[in-house]
Amino acid sequence: MSEGTITAGISISENALGSLFVIPPFHFSQSIAAYLKEYIIERTSGIDRIHAYNVLPEHIAAFAAEGFEPVQSRKCMIRPTEDIPIQLLPRTYKCLQPSPAVRMHITRLILDSYHDHIDSRDHQCFTQDILDYFKHHSTADLLEASSMIVDEQTEEFVGVCLVSLWEGLPLIYEIAIKPGHRGKGLAKHMLRKAIHELNNHYYVLRLFVTTGNPAEGLYQKLVSCRETN
Image (tube, rainbow, N blue to C red):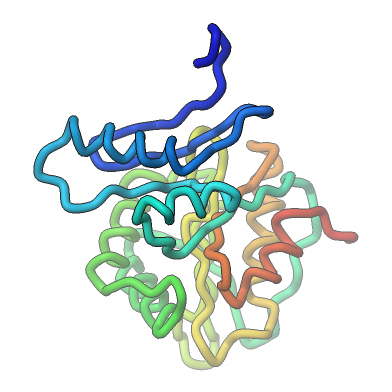
């Protein structure tokens, strides 16, 4: 506060700082980053690191000067839902609705898709993520907007797009295409299907993407802006 006026704000938990905002003409500085770091250190025992998340590019230098190390950054893309035509799949593929019965296939597909990828995680992490999805996020309307793509020649699961709900609005929970099946319009089909199916229930679809993800350009085209149909 400054003379009764809010100048900035931040969410503080046990060992994390998040969603910092500063209202012009005020500016974030290294001294404020130092104060926030000491604030947590003085009030929390037994922590070995402090995380700062949702950091804006203009605030990174101040945090870095206080010993924070930049890691992968993610951005949120948002696109209006609408009644758009769903792109046809190549004739050797079919699209199914995901179900808990095939969650192990989904886990394996995602693990193979993210091998040596910027968003790679271990098998246990992917397994828990998919388990959590079907336990907490798979309502009828969200499953209707989600997709599983199968290669009809081999019956192999080669693509998946899971739609969840976050803060009351739909979010792409996971999307992956197995190597060897990319560049065939499978991801575009699944994203357009989600946009189409959600149109009767929600007005936007969101997606978080890691900066540097090779698919970032595709998501930029399909999710963050309207296409010409």
